[in-house]
Image 1 (cartoon, rainbow, N blue to C red):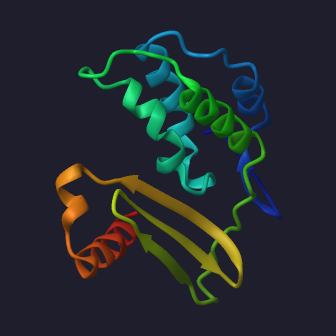
Image 2 (image 1 turned 180 degrees about the horizontal axis):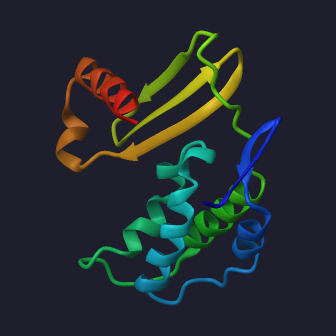
Length: 150
């Protein structure tokens, strides 16, 4: 399924790392979607995934003209780098307590599930514009609910 499972934890399969390394710069929205599809499978390995992919995601919108600019290139290279050097995630165990760290910003939600200072999983997502104006306590509740669903 694209993961290497060892005693140390879970990491990205080496063949997938080679695919990411050799991935050419996308030339149209369809190629951007294809890259984001592969990268999205590994989103749990990448902290701030939704923040990094924002410029690339914006290129896939029908209302946006496709223009590959510097922020897109930076996001593309950063995502490739993070996918190739993703931190190894620890395997969870029911004998230890879990700790959930969460953050709700104006435009995105993020959380990390940890166990004894080892990262089990990351999750993040962008918020649609109307939700940017929710009160802080609603955003905090939204990130906790998002984390529990994941």
